[in-house]
Length: 115
Length: 265
Image (cartoon, rainbow over all chains, first blue to last red; front, side):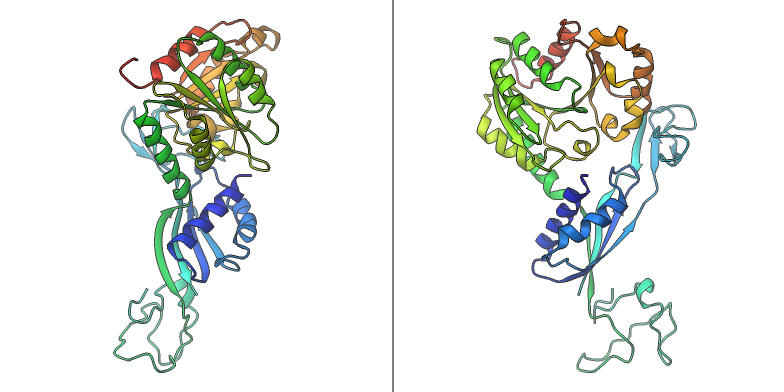
């Protein structure tokens, strides 16, 4: 359950950038390959924000798509959903699994709304 | 965001707030020739949006980078050892300590939720060790490792082996400042762990198959395991060993020694 640590990291990052400012909304990008489960993070967010300037803020999460570059044939492609029937293998249409992930690992605070 | 009054262009928020006489939404023109001593004619969110574009784990990543620089300045190798509980991390460290005695200075950072049991084992094997108990925590982070490194104060040209909390999920996300990541899987865990825990195996520089002496008893299919590693982490190297019989230990010790930075290696 590392989402609590992620939520605490989120609180640290925001309160350090905007000390003392009441936050009403936090917008995140969480990629499907980031290793973070959005529902678990939502659950932990209320715990982690209690008593901070983020308490009561809403959490908006968007999930950017996965994009990879094949190291074998250099094509840029969007693999199947890793949670889908194809499983966790990031497979290029050429058959190679030696790929570089260009997008999908994001774990980013895009913006916050100061109340 | 409008820089004049701080109201937002975000149509998701303003889309239902249009009033008769106001510009049609979307479009929401901003003339703003006015000062702000009056009430706005439309409902208005007093807040302002601040763009951050910052990694959530930026603080951990910064500390990890500091650890990495601290280690590099001293020519010290740091290995982050990760696996499920019971795959043989501590036994491998005990055996490594014996095998490399007098050849490579080793020290160990032990991560467990509770107890000093592993630190006692490592100390008995003749190695400097610091135990970190994470309590409820499921992984080590860069701040814990920074404190442990200061306590250990490993000599230049040595290797620090960091035994992470036994867990194939959470430790994958937390950079400790290590030089390389090693993921262990014992033959008794079966061949499909790389596919079931792809984040962990994808982050590995080296995958070590342990307890190979038990392979024949559990029908371990090394070819199938290797194929599973190749599917999620085609660039990772693989070493098979048994810390009990010593089979494969030379490859592991050789890899470890070759990774130590500095002119001596």
